Image (cartoon, rainbow, N blue to C red):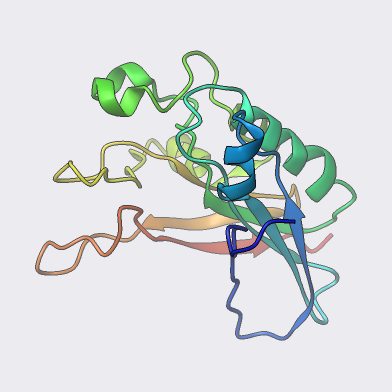
Length: 201
């Protein structure tokens, strides 16, 4: 094992007591073994809240700059077949580095478009099978706000941050927080804020 901290470290803050936390390793970028040794190791952080009927909060950050090499599809497949499997109630959210299914790389600058695969978005299976925060807005004919602002851009220009829930949880409120009153963006990614409704069944 090499030296140094190149593993991806995620954190979940909660006002409620966390009973367990598990780090799930996601597939690495398709690159040389040397680069894989020293590049970031993307992951999902699976935390379960105490006295919550095993409600799981899953925080993830998928690989950036994959340039359509298939890594994101493998990472989403790992979420579907390993992280989410067998869970009753869960919230999955984070930076997926994947355009929403209704967005196209062709809508971006050539430089930005090169980072995303042509054709189906890697997160399409999550949108097709589970409740999605931004699908809630689209069903209400509300325009989905962009979440990602490239450093060279003056404003966000695409959506690559997403949130999903199990079938027994619905998004009752979804919001992408605006810049500060001075018009400053605190990050290249804009914070997501939402309220969840739990089914009684």
